[in-house]
Image: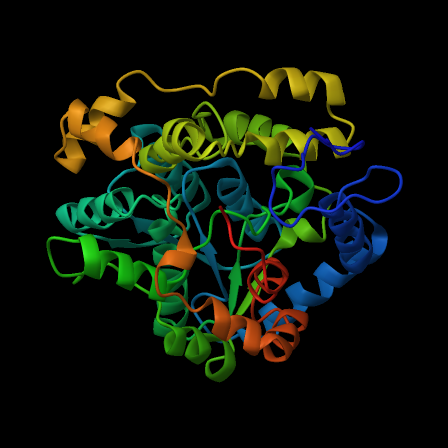
Length: 380
């Protein structure tokens, strides 16, 4: 199999391309983003300083001047500290899909309490949350944990609108995590509605779904900006974890996305076993690009089975109301993908010029434009 000469992405990733030196298109994308954002350089710091001044000016007479989405994970927890360090007055916002680990919940409490930050939480009804996740499992598609991403995004926008805040900080770092390829996984509000309509057993009443029109409302009319500070700054996840542990008693939860049990199921069991998709290559490739580990060590780590928390599968089966035999039957069914259901993907592609302008002004993340607004080969 053809593997990138610089990271560990291979030819199984949809839409990947290799240059004459064997370097993949995603490594080149990361290089371009570093140049555009000045990541870790003086000009990146200057760009971010200018954004901070804009946030302070816009929110000068308000109780809060910025929203920070929190999950209890490393990046969002550290982002709260960063906001305070820069003199901002953040409101922490959490979307509770009722699948959080106890460690994640405690981390949110420890950091917000220590920093004196108010917390706004939207809790989805637990049975409804189970029903939505179960629908994606029964639909035989990869994005079993995808509804949480949409739910969090919608809750962030709702909180920003409620408190008249124009800026949202997000804790993603393409240096530490890469940019996930637009391949077999995809999610939007239309997709969630169609899958749940076909496989759900109860109405969606408390789940904060984001329709296409609501997405345009938040971005085009409300003009709520999303900023990713780690795209500009020199950020180290390991250093952040050390600081969080020392300052707040924050605890590590075992791995990327493992602070939430549904995410852990999707990344450790469901994706690898049913779809042959193991998202550990995102972080491993990022570590190789950054010189934090050798390519050989990354490939060796990637060859091992993903870590699975004790009792995780039993927990999922109980909440899905499935026995092991039924679970195995569905796991053995032929995979389906977003192309088999109704989505907004074609609309995003048709409106690519609009979303390019929105991305350049931080009204949508640049990663959204790069992943969702270009035609991709159908996953199979």
